[in-house]
Image (cartoon, rainbow, N blue to C red):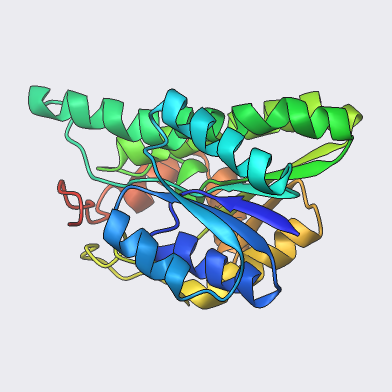
Length: 253
């Protein structure tokens, strides 16, 4: 099995790399932190490649994809995992570039990750593209307009892509995790129900991907929460969530 994963230098991406390495997969790993990415790859006793690349850089992602396919063939699975989460205050003009960064990474990053692999998978007639979205994309969370907006766009974009590609044998899986214990969530100053370790989240997400489910929320308890959130009338939603603590306006180091 050949698996290509973005955002693999830490957190969920590194955990997914460990999970598929344990199954003997050949891995293509991308990330922005060279030292951490090298550490992850060197800890895995499987063949593969690592690429220092930002998912916002389409040219770098195409080069990484082409190099991986030249050396190892078309992947069976591509996981677009790279993402950032940061609180914003739209009233502050300094936060507009932050909004752009979050949207580019969490939405455009899906496209730059998948684009180089789509035509090769179509020609082969099989393959799976898995996008990591979030429960935060189900409704707009106060103080998280950038992240919620980006993940909502990601969910819709992945659905469109799924319908387009399914007739050619290419499966698109949308995964919406709840809270996972990673550097991205450790800055949160509020309670995170049903928190999963990165390794447990990776195991559950891999099971969803293997089942080629069109859309799944992980864990199942958050699926119940998500369903309730989706069905809440707007006035009730506003009342319940208006006092929710805001996400910090600072990216983790």
